[in-house]
Image 1 (cartoon, rainbow, N blue to C red):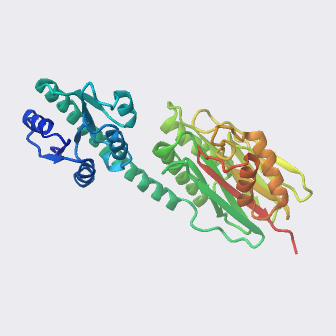
Image 2 (image 1 turned 90 degrees about the horizontal axis):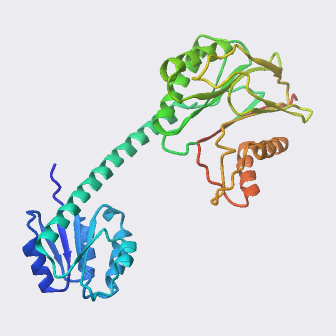
Image 3 (image 1 turned 120 degrees about the horizontal axis):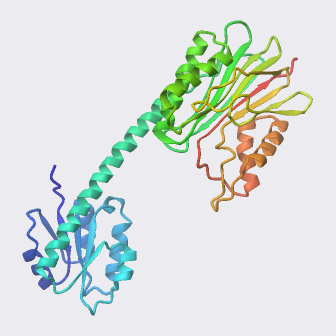
Length: 380
């Protein structure tokens, strides 16, 4: 579709105006402004593809107008061609910094003007196509993110003896993080999972959707943890086995009658398990990450008695950093998380506050950040 955006000429010189109007052979509409105020008003109203700004007789005012144009998001993809003579106060370097895209010396040469206008319009068309394409991608990613939010647990399973809190913060519209929990057949049994796909955006979100589907299928079939892990890995190998994608995952079955926690850890961050006596275990990997290799049928069993606290999280927590790039790191995060769990209460909120306190400022979160906290209440 043809771009119908007009061209805007800004000059207080009738001679320059007449020369430009005469030499520009474009059939599209020309807008004429004889002052900067009128030029800004027309630019905002009509969003021209090209602005020809005469800086030969306006001294430094043209710089201010250039900056004003570039401060307007609607004019980001408008091409600005600055015209000046040798005696103009406006220097090209300053104009470039202020936002000029190209320059033309006065008096204009018809052939050069025609060529530069053609280049400018071609550049403006490409920029606007790119902007429209970017808007479509952003809208699609928003739709992906909305769907992904719907795939996360809508409610927390109720078990009177458990407190379950979660936190989910994607770094972009779509996330590679996933957590879930649901009751298993029988009495007082809960399955929990947290997973992290490599990368960001739509690709990792698709992998997470795949993991969620398989995880829920295992629930419906009452599949043991190790069989569930093998099934997820087999499917990932089929889909991304020749690609650099992978998934880390921690899953556990909490048996409140048997006072045990049975878990598998496929290359994921070590979960933190705090026993009632105050000692803390780090539940490290039991098998390699998923999607690269075959996995071992390895699971481990630890006590999960009243008073036990469990923290699952993704690596976005320890990848956080300050504005100047100072990272928290896994060791400091684990020490901080263990201290936060020792205090109890609203652990997930307190943990984020403790990280800010450690840095002395709110951190940046370049990666997806997800956590699941489970506390078994003391018996009355």
